[in-house]
Image (cartoon, rainbow over all chains, first blue to last red):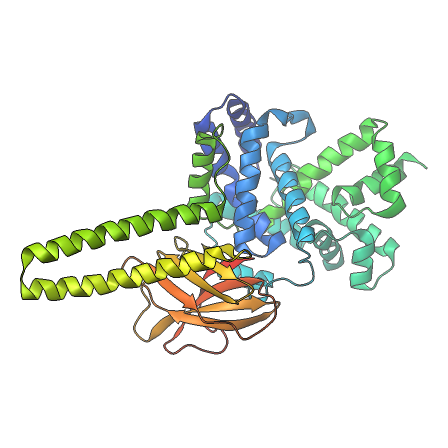
Length: 191
Length: 253
C-alpha cells in the first residue's frame, strides 16, 4: 500500500482538469475495479453498480478540479463519492430490506461476479483482509454494517440487539485498531 | 464537552453512523473549523478507503469505459435522446431497412425467374414478414402511454450480452430483444424471469441466432404483482418453474 498510486492519481487528476482524455482513461483503469467492487457490495445488483461506476467517473471528468489533496488521497475522495452515491441510490429505492433475491448474499455476489484478480490487487486485498481478520468479530460487524450497509448507530443497535453505547464503543475501537494497523509500518507485514 | 468526546463522535461520523442530536451537534462543531477534528476525519477517511480493498476485486464490463469515453468525447453536445426515443429511431430505421430489403428481394425474384431461387426468396419474404410483424408489435407496445424500456445488462456468464425489454405493465406483455448471448447448447434454452420481491416467475423461452440475437414476445403474465426486475437464465429445454441455471442478463425497473 505504497503512496505511489496516490501520487499518480493526483497528477492524473490535474491532467484531467485540463481535459486530457488519456489521463482520464488511465485514471479509470487504476480505480474502476475498486469503485465497481465497492458499488456491487453496497448495491448488490450488478446493473445498479455499473450505472454507479459510470456516474462516478463522469463526475471525476467534470469535477476533477474540485479535488484537493489537503482533504485526503484521491482514492479516499473517489471512495467517499462512491459510497455516498451508492447509499443514496439504495435509500431512494427502498432496497435496504428487500433486495433482489438472486443477488442477495455477498457470497452469491462473489460467485456471480467475475473476480478478476490481478496480482497487485490480490496482494492488497489479502493484506487488508489480514488486517480485518485481526479485528474482533463484533467490531468488524459493527464497522461493516455502518460502512457497507449504511446503517446508523441506532439502526445497528436495533439490528444487533445491543445497547447504543456498545455500538459506539465497537465502532470506535474497530476504527482505532484499523487506523493503527493500516498506517505504514504498523501493518501485519510492516507495509 | 471535552475534545476527546468530539474526536470519539468524529469516528462514528466518519463511518456515516452518527445520527439524531449527536449528528446535529457534531456538524455544528465542524462548522467552527476545528482543525483537530478535520485532521482526524481525513485520517479516518483515508483508512476507511482501504476497506473496499478487502473485498474480492471485480472488473466492470468494458462497455462502461467505452460509454464513458464516448460521453466525454461529446460532452458539450446536447443530452442524448431518451431510451424510448432512441428505440423509436431504431424501429423506424429498422423498418425502413426491412422494407428496402423487401423491395430488393422482390425485384431480384422477378428478374431471376428461377424456381429454386423463387423458393429461396419466398423463405426470405416469410422471414421479412416476421420481422415486420415484430416491428409492428414494437410499434403497438410503444403506442401504450405507460410502456417502459428496461435495459438488461450482461452478467459474468456472458458479459458482452445485453438486452432491451419493452414492457407494458398494464397489459403485462412485452417484447425482449437480446444481443451477443452465446448460442444455447443442445438441450438448453434461455428463459426469461419476471421478478417480484424474491419470487421469479417464468416469462417465456427463447433461443438466439448465430450472432446471439434473440427475440421473445412475452405472453401476458398471470401474476398481478408489480414486476421489479427481469432476468434471463439458461435452462433445460422446455423451461423450468424456478431458475436453476446461470444468469446471463439482469435489468430492473
